[in-house]
Length: 445
Image 1 (tube, helix red, strand yellow):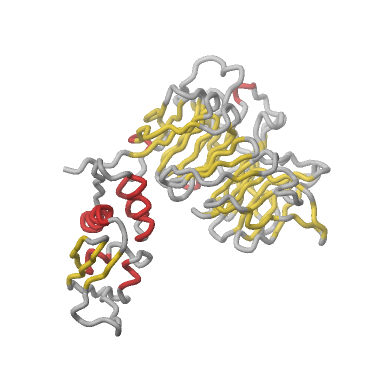
Image 2 (cartoon, rainbow, N blue to C red):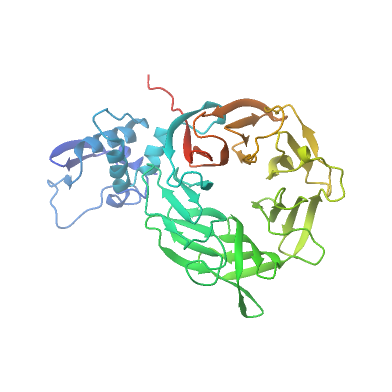
């Protein structure tokens, strides 16, 4: 790419700054500066100005502009103590530099280097049910029928109110939109899922289920999506019929549906996960929602389960009951966890394979508390995470050895956690507080 190295002068709020097109090119095409230059990063000519009129006026905060300009020059972010961080973040949003600030603010995500950056008090003590990390470092927290949304600066947006219908799951489509599943009547109309604006909480459209040209009432459950903008949801009808629905995220139209055949143990799935490599959907119904656990891979191309496992008929004690499951495509395996945080593994290349339990990860001794928060799993950038009581454990390596533990004693047991935007969010049940864990950036020498 040819780069014009001529100097560029800005007047920002009365202060003069000089830089080069080379520096401004680091901002990228989607920034405010990208609009000022042609495709080769040469300043676009304006017939209304003379050659001498090279000063570009921007009516914004000059102190923040100075920090952001240095960020483009060095890739490093240094915020003086007299500059409020939220003010800088808002200025970065104006210039289209939010991604640059986030990258410099946090180091590359590493579960073994995470530190507790902040804890946020919940809005409905004792009622927190789920937390979901957004793609840009924000999050949403479900409290019964309310969903509280926070952007990456942790500023709270207007909440989403589901008219007293309890939230079952939520998933971020992008930083501006979120899909929420709930009971039958979402927003006083039939349908168990809706797409909401994260900025103002407004319902943009509802996802409907139809069969043989007739609309059906249903409860939306676990959610997932794939790279082709398809949204998946487990569904339960009024007559206890179960299935998996598929919708187009862009239009909201239903494009497919899988009904559970007679005699199956699918039920109302607790967890869905799209597997990019195999074009299949992981469907898991877990204990204690049902007495028996069921995990399968559903191929929508021929509506068949190409891999499945169940503990039906197996001699499994309560301590071996599966509480969560996650597919790991790179190792062709599925990882499961029980209430003692024993990790188990199944081979995806062999249908009906047995669980190989490993206790090297066990952190707890004895029984869980009377009202436990069941363990959950997450896989992120080659590291495996599992929650247990008031901590999140990190596992790494080919044998998934325990390498670190994230723990904040305040707030009680962790009922849910989520990773996204280079942050880990953990929601505690007792005090309804959620923690934000970040990778500490390297010190500037």
